[in-house]
Length: 413
Image (cartoon, rainbow, N blue to C red; front, side, top):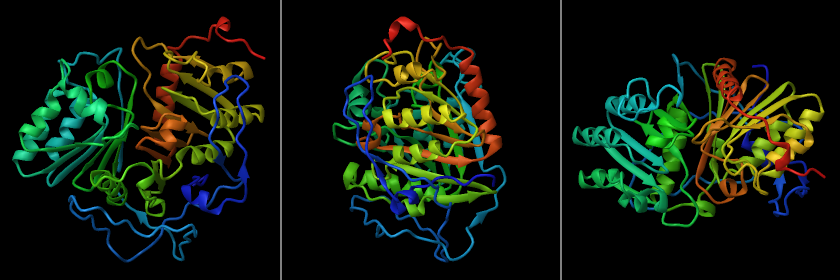
């Protein structure tokens, strides 16, 4: 591997804490963040004990002991040989935009995974309004598959009574258990775990808008090790562990799949943005990003610092809200770093960072303090030039659909 990923293990081996920097363009108080000069090694703990997922019950999950002492493997990392362990999908609202025609859509792909499930489908997904997906889940339940769905309260079960919805009610009437988080912060994940072997994640909400109108991405990972991490996170939420009550088990959220290091992080327990700051700080060649919401000034400033050091930095913001005082579009614009507003009449909903043409960051987390400190979110960080090339291709396609920022929007100091 040309470059080792920065992992959350970095946080437990910090050399120094950096003071938060106030944005010159917004008075919003920033949350302190931490980083270090040198990335920690990408280490996968090695054990002889097989990973066993306990069935989901209403009994609170007792997590493994987590300490601040770094874990260092005494044996080589586990290398997992697999055939095509990944798939990447992108929405294409200029071409695939009719919810009545599933052919070629992400919805069709998802239904295929549902239909192939043999034992379990555990879902943590923000919102839902696709009846064909509901019908596929009901069919899976009827053939003996354990189907459970964790969603957000307001955007999930409460919205289920709105016109065009009712899909959660269909699931519940068919005996499928659905729970929400019952709290003000968001259960904002969009992940599915199939048969404790396959993870479906990314930025895509399972809605008509999410699949047929917005720009989104899906990453599918075939790995029992990473499915274990997601299954454990699902169980924590299912048993009522949200936010600060959720333990970090980051030292067990690793795998090397056919030579590709992959790391999974969950918020708020894993302090994702601190990891992203450290990762971006180590960029040597290029940084690309697609952002539905980008309001974290320290992350923006690190990208700008790398641009000043000669790194090629470009980014696309969702147009809606990007001219607000909280958005960091002004920070990039006033620093002279190329950043544009998207050209989608709906939303650019991706949350992507691509570093040095080889490292991909994707998931549900918007680049904001709320996402990092309060919401339930997940992010995958992987190093694979082939996968990165697909995300770069999507970036270039969307970059070519963007518009330059109107100088009248901002007054730079």
